[in-house]
Length: 80
Ligand SMILES: [Zn+2]
Image (cartoon, rainbow, N blue to C red; front, top):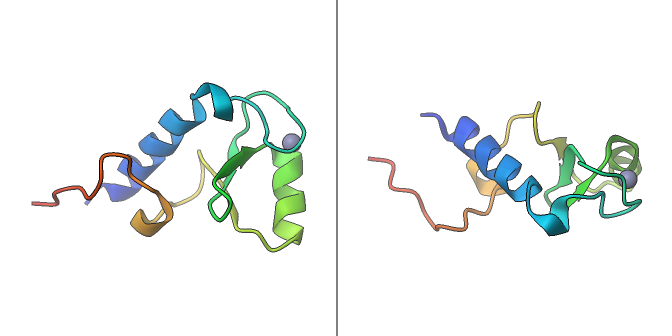
């Protein structure tokens, strides 16, 4: 099961969208972190702020993303 890799790929695709090309908080380019509670992409600095506010943030490149943390635009994936 490669769902982690698939989820990461989805996140990296989302990060390429124009509305996600800058940190949602400070406007820094190419944010590498995402708050999966708020559904926004933020930079490293702001990810620390979000974490201190108890929002859940993860690195879109480094962390493990479980299936239920990623909204798949194409809907449920056939796992057969
Ligand atoms: Zn920021």
